[in-house]
Image (tube, rainbow, N blue to C red):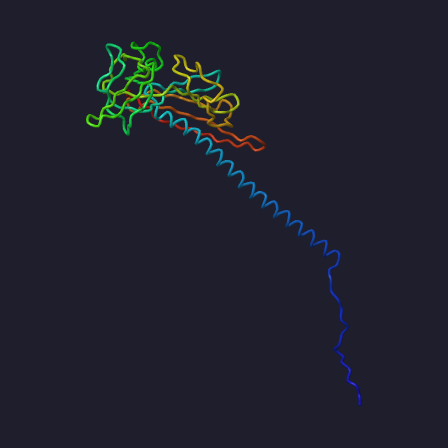
Length: 283
């Protein structure tokens, strides 16, 4: 009996990577990893830069809006611009309440007068009384009863009379006052002390308060303590500007504010913002 021999059988061989192939794979993976890392790094840095630009823009917008919101409620003819040691400043007298009076003391000093109730009044409203502030001098002047249209003492509104809808405005501490002139519309205001907004040499914007009425702008502004509030920082040096455009026949007076907020470091980012608001001209 003859044996059968399989002629198709072949010896088994093992296949693997050569050293050259292994090095080539490592090089290719390194190139791909470097490119991917660069792509991811640039994308992440782009997100960071975008977020920081948005933060700068928000800071600039909020700072301008905080200032101009106060300007919107400023007493007529109380807004003025000045420089405080080379720093740009804007000063104004905020209105707290306003209404119409029955009569105010003009010929002689009085301790009180009657008025129509303030909107939403409950009694106890307090502030300095302003009647027809027709000029800057009538706001910041120092001659009561002749030029100054704002009382030298605060006053407090009494309880509302349910029948007449009137309130009595009584000067505090038994003080009395008389005003230089009547208002053509019998309008009066309760106001607070002046406030100012100024930048400093360190690129910060401050709000100053509780320093009383001053003839010359910038006098007596508190540079330390709780009577100054930080509004914004990172301002570019000398970038803050206030411009007061006088009233014309076609429009009211306008206050324009502009500033630049910047981010320091290797890649400097800047946001330049400018905004304006109209003033009340009629006292």
